[in-house]
Image 1 (cartoon, one colour):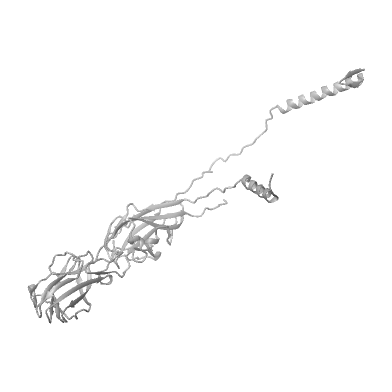
Image 2: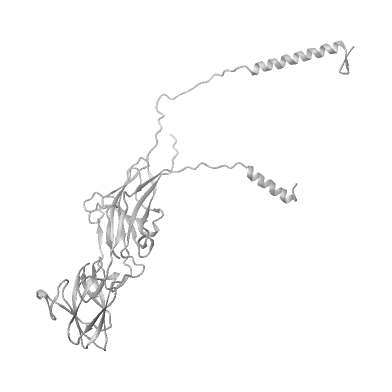
Length: 223
Length: 179
């Protein structure tokens, strides 16, 4: 009898234990061999042979002064010596020249310097925008269908983008708009050549006009 | 570790919130197109100023005109548009001292002087207006910017006349322009 670690085993038991140990090592080795092997799988690929082209559209908004003789002043020609009750109409063509339809057209203005012309909601500049389906005549007449894009709004309120109602902002659509720039009749009284306090007279500002439009709502197409 | 169950609970929730992954939805921005005017529109307003002067100079007195008037003798003065806006009318008030009354107020056409107290240069027709001292009277006449009218005042007594001229925004010439 052999005595190991204080455990007494017979010869037969010892031999059995050795066999089990060898078998265990063999199993573990085999497992390691298997797990380190490279397995190649079969794959199949299908590729379209034509088409599949994906392109994006464009969104483009441009403005240009009317080309009708007599009303080509646009935004670049100065407006001078206006008085209460006066109105100057300017004519602009707004074009969605992209390939995407647009929505939510807006207008905002910025004025420098800021003075009563663009801060006084009552006596300051008032803006009205009308749309015509065709070019306006030099006399300010719409021979097509006329609609109101912006009801009379004080310039003081146009510092933030304000919605315009245009008949169409589809791709390629042109809006022929008349922009009425007016001063209300007012109640100023000048006595002996002395201008009243807070007068609207003798002021100057420069107005930048910005039109915006947004891409039409995204679409999901099953085709 | 915690002074109370409430503190422990609070600590638990704070830790829970701090460690919870925050899910941020990706922003889907629709394309926008902007068109800004190629240059700013220069915008200016004019002025409407009318005043009375003893001589025709276009110098704004910024005050009423004071004249010494001799009884029954025409005294000339000028009404001038020293602004940049055309006017369709003015409101003039002539006050007299010494209880004097206004006999008449005459004027020649725009830019025409009196030749005599009762005639205009070139024989053009003058206009005779009735007026009451101290009472505002509207004179409807076209007074383009930088033009003038000569007036004459005749009173019943020697007195001092104070002539005030007012222009209201309703008395200016307005326009609608397509350009």
